[in-house]
Length: 221
Ligand SMILES: O=C(CO)[C@@H](O)[C@H](O)COP(=O)(O)O
Ligand SMILES: [Fe+2]
Image 1 (spheres, rainbow, N blue to C red):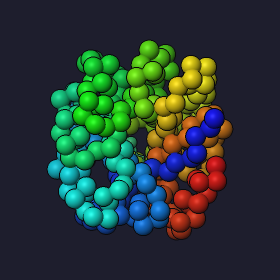
Image 2 (cartoon, rainbow, N blue to C red):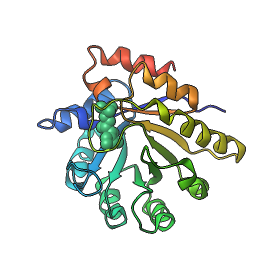
Image 3 (spheres, protein in one colour):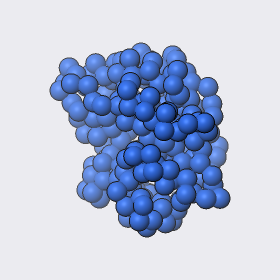
Image 4 (cartoon, rainbow, N blue to C red):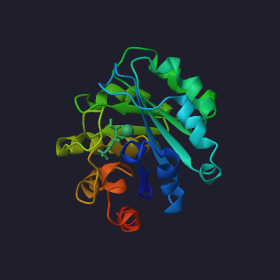
């Protein structure tokens, strides 16, 4: 059964001088997921937020029920999962590319009371995460090279999404299949067609002239 489409606005495209207000746009539009991009200037050439920022957002009463989808773009994510769990993350996703104990870190994220996710860069094949699929709540396919918002979507990622969706169906698994990078009202439906159900949108959502219309369009995919 196909999971309902879910929009996860990326705070990276919000106003960094007013992050709390930007995050509150999510519940304001009746949405439940907020995507938070954590970058370390090593795994990706950019720096964003730390656990203190996540904790401060979580303390906002308007965000008490918001699902914090925390995307760790870190060389050593295993060193930070406790901090982000304590800060109030709902889901913590970690990249497959750096070397560390992936299975152990995914298990630890669940022990900490969070859902877990595994992320693949554009150049990483679906096979890299195949053996972990029965241990995850979410698989995130990057449709841009991670590090920055506002980049062009890579249509060449559609077969990878389709492969992951095929394995999900064949094996009776129920992880969410998320896409991130350049997702808008034109590219999102391509991902939906390929099998994705969870759509991160930074620029397309925050810069939309009508955010409510954007959210309604995604809900109808
Ligand atoms: O993880 C990342 C970038 O590394 C994303 O979550 C971006 O924040 C998506 O931004 P847009 O491409 O939607 O502007
Ligand atoms: Fe992201």
